[in-house]
Length: 205
Image (cartoon, rainbow, N blue to C red; front, side):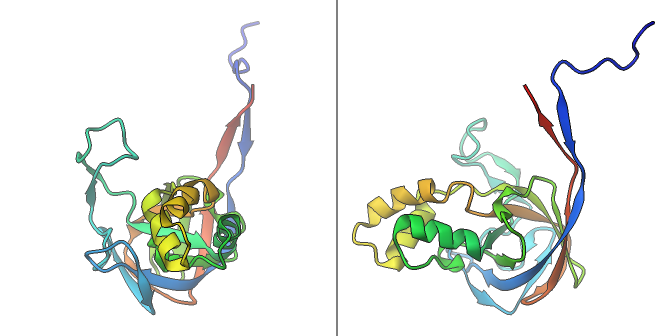
């Protein structure tokens, strides 16, 4: 008898979609001329990102993270927002031998509470803010030496360049997420978030 649904050569494990809850602990905005952020009570989100933020825009120029394009190529801006968690930043600070890392030092826009392993949320995860705005996760935010230098300088590390080089290693998979605005609106500090993690699949050898 012909098997119309043969087993795939590589077994796949399906992880069902699920819903989680979180809260906005703090909000930040970057001045138009610098990536470091400052605390805000609310942020206005549009389809080009956060109004007035350094990373706002519907498009951006490619850089070292996109080696498949010539540097400076105009592309979709999927890095409109930077999202971090306090527990992960505390781990990075400990690895670097410093007291703390403040979200604004590394250009974060949202500090979120209530989501263990924030940086491991997959691409496509939706964050529905109670006030009506929605953002979609693009990917993990890869740590870089620019953010590392900011951390080393603010923390008063004796060797700033060594600190800048240490940060990418210490913050690997703990640097948070980058996301883009799917539905515009205003988000406020303390606001509740409904998180929808999409169905995922894991290839098994």
